Image (cartoon, rainbow, N blue to C red; front, side, top):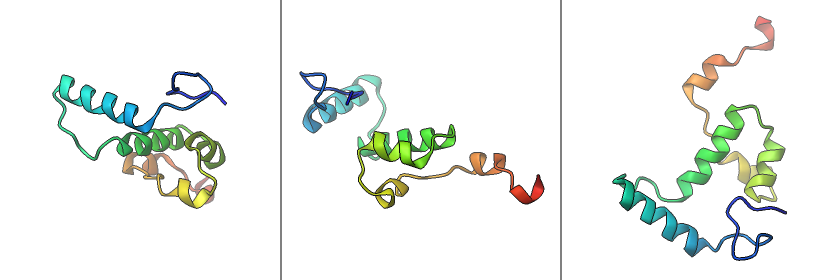
Length: 91
């Protein structure tokens, strides 16, 4: 399995502490105030995948979840996205 954020060895994930240090340093350097923490990045990533049409099973795998219930917690749907969805009854 390839990781987007890999550790010293490409086949292993980056350590959580390392990811957090990078996140906090980027926030400080950019002047962005910490809003929600690093976990928000996972949530946004999953939400953008969903809004771009990625199926929930693929998102589950990318997020490393075993259960779809866990993945569904990330599924925040924006009003803009909902406005684009057409009911099959309207087609």
